[in-house]
Length: 190
Image (cartoon, rainbow, N blue to C red):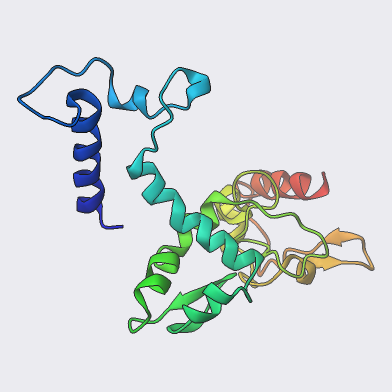
C-alpha cells in the first residue's frame, strides 16, 4: 500500500477513535497512538500499526516465496522474474506491481533471516547468516578480501577428507590479518 494511503487511513482511524462518528471539532487525544497500537496484553487496544504492517508484509510474502514457490498466487505473479539474487528472484523493470513489491528490496529480507546449514547446498558461505546473526563476509571482511572464492555454497568450502573448512586464500596473510583469520577459523570450528 502506498505510504500516503496508510497516512490517510491512520488519520481516519485516529479521528474516529477520539471524536466518534460526528466530528464536531478537535478534541485532545488521551493516549499516544503508539500506545493504542500496542497489543492488548501490553495495555494497548491492539490496533494494527499500518506503517509497521506495510513494512513487514512484503517480507512475510517474500518468506512465503522461499518456503512455497509453487503456490498459486506466486505462480500468477511471477511475470517479471529475470534471474536469481542468491535465494530470491531478481526483478525485471517490466515486472508486475505485485512482484516488484515483494522482491524490490531483496536485501531487507536476506538481512532479516538466518540460515540453518543442513547439507550446505542452499546456504551461501560468505553472504548468508548461518553462523550467528551476521554473515561471515561482514564479520571477517579482511579474510573475505583475501579469498579467491567469494561466491559459493557452504558445501563447496567443506573438505570432507581433512574434516575442515577451506577458505581458498589467494595469498599468505599479513601479520595484522592473522588474528581475523584465527577468529574466523574458531567460529567455523564451533
